[in-house]
Image 1 (cartoon, rainbow, N blue to C red):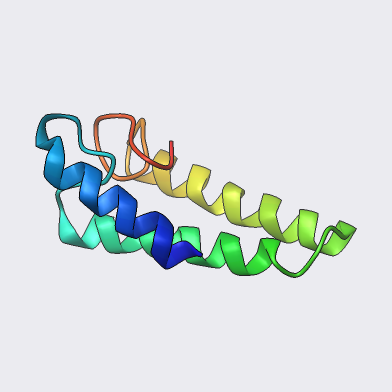
Image 2: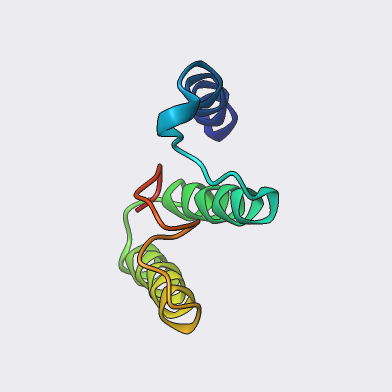
Length: 83
């Protein structure tokens, strides 16, 4: 399912390069894809309190990353597919 999502995101980025959904930097793009994959794997475990806590922990890591790198959005200066 994640691969399908990124197939369409990549397609949209190719068709509309002026409004990209992903960062242009390949490292930042890879970080976003890894985050989405991890969230997807966690979500597929089911709706449990443990899963909820794991998802919140992952989101907290992104917030920390943003703060440490003085970024408003994950992946760059502009809103994109994640935030």
